[in-house]
View 1: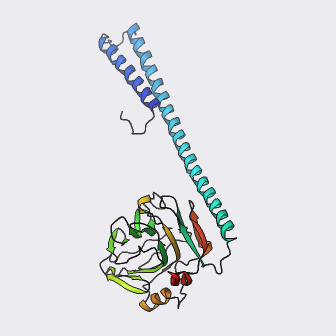
View 2 (view 1 turned 60 degrees about the vertical axis):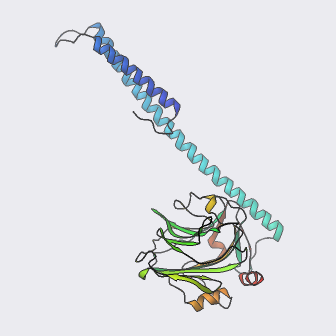
Length: 319
């Protein structure tokens, strides 16, 4: 029988003992004369039957031991997951306490007047939107961001669904250009976000011919088509800010993480008009996403990421 890569040494030792005993039984059987039909059992035959019985007992013990070890491994895995959850919860509590001590208790001027800060590039700091997406045939996603990365800005946001980790992803990894992924199809976006200043960005897409457009600070910087043409965005996935998902809701890679600040993440179920996007960027409009709105109660932070008060237009004009 083959060994799984993570099979415990104790199981391998038991299996080896069973094989050794089986070999001994085979040798004894080869040395015994053939039993004639109807003859009385001989002493060697009785010994052979006893060995067979012992063999069966050992196999049962082996199976019982394997099942016990499997249950122990599952319990250990559950304990590790719970431990990680508890650590993240404690980190969040400490981070919120530090924020309160530095800036006073959180009390934003309005539910959307806050930002998420991810101070270090790693695989455990992120924010998660509590709400998911419905099935979409078009969308516009907008947000304010300020990257502090030395190279690529990482992953400002990702949306993952069952069996497709890259349903919607905005990613700039290493020296590669900024990319919009939809259902694993890729469009390169001519946006420049590495100056450590606040920028307002929007990406818009429709399933019809896969048309897309990308905006930076209210100006269209790129457009194209044939990006996941006739694909519908699948519902009930997970939206993560700051990390790229290799599986739905997890398996983050620190090299693809965003480091910096994010705010005003919103999703619409259609392509916004250029004038609407310009209004959002220059703060003459306060249009909220009709699918996902930026609201303090709708955003959870994990791993040491934090929230703080933020006035997008004031900060954007300072930049």
